[in-house]
Image 1 (cartoon, rainbow, N blue to C red):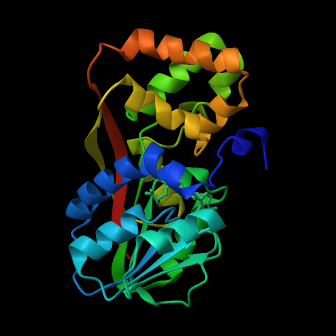
Image 2 (cartoon, protein in one colour; image 1 turned 30 degrees about the horizontal axis):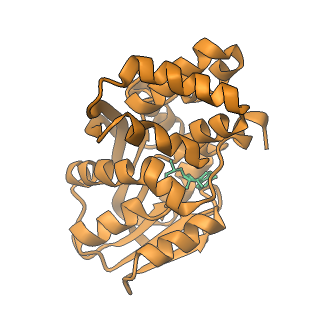
Image 3 (cartoon, helix red, strand yellow; image 1 turned 45 degrees about the horizontal axis):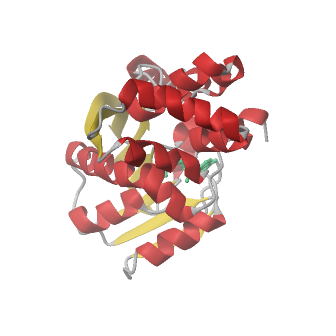
Length: 264
Ligand SMILES: C[S@@+](CC[C@H](N)C(=O)[O-])C[C@H]1O[C@@H](n2cnc3c(N)ncnc32)[C@H](O)[C@@H]1O
């Protein structure tokens, strides 16, 4: 594990839900509207985390089955607890070696994951392998380089202004391929003829506290970085963000993702 990956801190399911899951559930709906999948399909959700996309698939597409694959045991346990549905099962595993047979799914999807996978081309090859011929592959990642993931972008900009070492932990720097052109190039490299689009949701925090407190829960790269700071460093970062965003009411930001879909 590299120093940068050490901050990724995927472990505590409830903390992830508060930090990201509430927003990833929203963008999952937008993604499924765009993907336009068939009803009654067998799905794989690669890097399912606490199950935000899996539950949205269950709620909106009437699938035959959904298999969520996720390396974090804590997230798998959380996904199981939050998803009491006989059509769903969650297994530990990684995107580069999916624990499913060839040609066993109708839709292979992955939400906000591929940037964390070391060999993305291999991961896409695995998603192709488990698909039946002619079926649907889709994935999306946050638009980190374009500043499109507003609350994460605000965090890292403030962090880097106080601590130059934070600059290289910024997901915008770590994941430069998360652009329209980068996604298209990745798909070409993986031999996938994909259509790429931007998806957006509004992230509305009730207050500055509602914006900041999830960063203190330790789940994800930015919270992992905050937890690594001494207390006075944490307080300084909070103050810098408050100076920028705290107007005494709701904090409204935008979350934009780049999504790809292809019929294989
Ligand atoms: C931002 S979360 C997204 C989780 C979920 N898909 C969602 O939409 O809420 C990123 C997820 O990628 C998972 N992940 C990291 N490396 C992975 C890998 N090599 N293969 C599969 N998943 C991975 C993490 O454990 C984490 O659950």
